[in-house]
Length: 382
Image 1 (cartoon, rainbow, N blue to C red):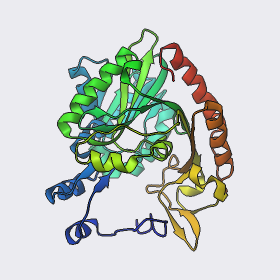
Image 2: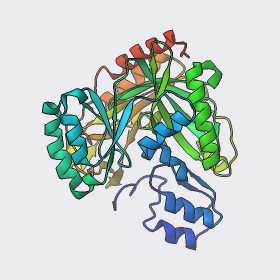
Image 3: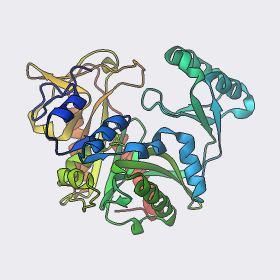
Image 4: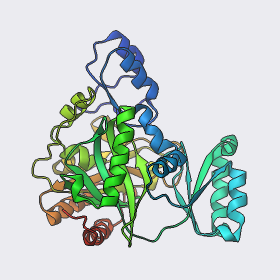
């Protein structure tokens, strides 16, 4: 991890953050991702304001805790079982009675994603690579096995929580998993279905106690009868649509600096109403440095992940571990007051990128707009 951020304009890479905090005057520490609790704790101990999730991130990293949290607030919970260790998980999934389940793991995010277990014949192939990848820690992990639910659609609510206050406006999105997202800004939770309001109210209480001051996202499945199930939490910059979300927020620095002090401010998005983001992928990015080029006119519509600038050229670093699903290297995004203009600008930016093996799901935005139409019938609309 020696190169992420090197050479980028207006970025000074610090290789020894704790030493830097001790030896320099620091106005703000921003830790918008997971697993930086110790850095946050150290900064707070020095009296430095911190914008980050802290211990509040448990609700994302411990999936069973999320279910217990939902149940304690009388919110719908998907029928699930928790299984300790990969051997016990295999024993459970080998049984024909346990087909058609969704498998999730706590703590590890990104390195091992949720997958659909249809039957053991198909899943057994996945287990070969899982056992190799996890090695001895496979016996230590806790797995959550969920029943499928017949949802009409899935929406996400994304933005910022500051000590229990959901900043407005916030984004309501339709995510196409591992492909992209299309959404809009909403200026009040009162415009959302009651079921979603109850979920956000419970989260508000939790984030207030945790003094959570960070980005967030929650995925919610809506059934035909109106029941709303919170399925996953994101206590970090969501991907997608983090690039569109951060770039469209004109007062992002104010939100972070004041938020770190527990002060909630309104989000300024100008005339932006719609946001969209397409995930860019290449198999080359899994285990090799990826050289990425694009026209200068689209530089404000593109975001590269874990990258650096060497001799004036953009390079994305290879992923660790080298999982076939870890082929994302960036995103194209746009925001606008007009839905069609937003979609067109985003696609043009995606098409402009040059890199070995670069691709994206071509119908991402169209599929997301179809989900947007389904949500509108449930009262969720711009």
